[in-house]
Length: 173
Image (cartoon, rainbow, N blue to C red; front, side, top):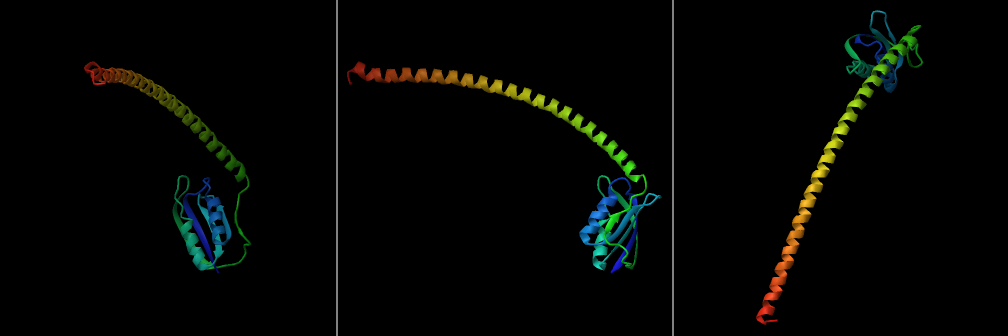
């Protein structure tokens, strides 16, 4: 059993990094904790099997839309077995600050969704107008086709009548 103490730099605070670290640690069956430091870094202490710790150290190097780890200082030492599980340490008042930040993100999200709905509504109206135009064109073409077909049928009937009349006139039938 080994202990990994990691100091993680980058965009790792107020972006859900600690929650991700907790999920990853639990998935690897590790014990320990993760906390935010005042200097903007996150500190992680994880204990477990050597191989799992190495995989964990790689997995916490996260780069996505919100989280961007720029560097990780790693120190390995023997495990102290002081942890029963893996958890996230939260400083006093931090939950309120996180809720305020989350509320801000939620407000932005609602605003963007409303804009998206307005744009989508406008586009749907344009599509419906185009559909109506297309339906009018199809109806017009169908009308022209029906008239042409009627004329062709009338012409065929006249031709058939002439074909039938010709042998009668000649006395063949």
